[in-house]
Length: 197
Image (cartoon, rainbow, N blue to C red; front, side, top):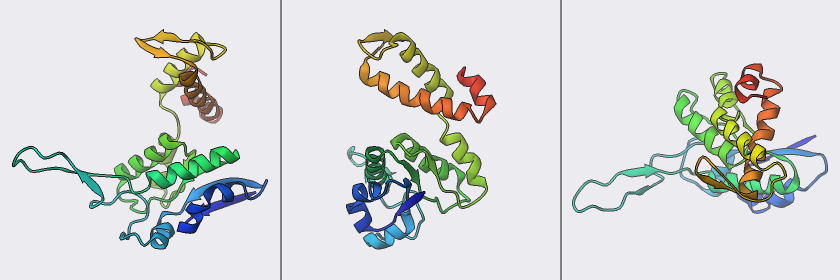
């Protein structure tokens, strides 16, 4: 098995070719610290955001404007996930360096999960439980996804569920969530019960 680490600007430019480079390729992870250096980014952080990378809220007269911190990595993670999905391999988020900030670690892992990553590296034992929780689908999401699949067994047509239209595209999204929940449930009896699987 081969597991690639995406940690240079040239690697990001060639991420699709890297993902398809070998039939033995299993997955790819983001290496944010090395990638930051390769790009010439002005940060010493390992993964996560930066307090100066953000957008200002719209001006409202003379009122102070709030800076909303943005995610430095979402574009790169999305490109890596696209390349991995196209090649049939798994995408993983790289390490989050500030293991004293569990809330920021959880937020960064959740961003990666929502973008399509299946797991993350951990630098500290405290990050393992965070990753297990974040990379397991939310119970409410699983139960709703199961409703969609039950209402549209063959994935065609359109139905209304809880006041929202569901169609073949949302059926595909629901299938992703339920398939993941089944894999998690096979190893976690508590979540299996909560998921109803």
